[in-house]
Image (cartoon, rainbow, N blue to C red; front, side, top):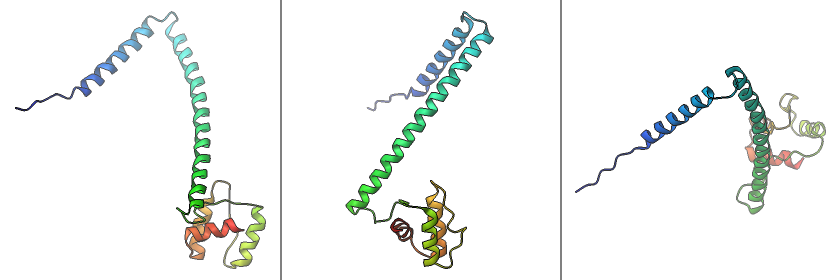
Length: 144
């Protein structure tokens, strides 16, 4: 004898959405203000809370980025990842660019164009131009 149980999750979801929709409609119909005033109030609240949400997401993103970089450094220290798996630019980039040009005559200003947060692009260009691995390029840049 087999027991067959129906999957009612779709019906439950549909009922929940219908209930929420009915609640919203009833709230709008029974609101103390005119419809236009209620919509303006909701619009203001939505703008206010979306700004706060954006700030919180930005903060959490920065925290997550800092933690991720910390974990990468720990993995490098433990020897799990190779040294140079993360880029840590130090010092004056113009001076470092001059050192690289002396070491590798084939590099141009365009190859060495670096903007904060665009380290991966720099590493990729140098990989193509010098024919070295990502870890070799990263280690070379970190050692400057």
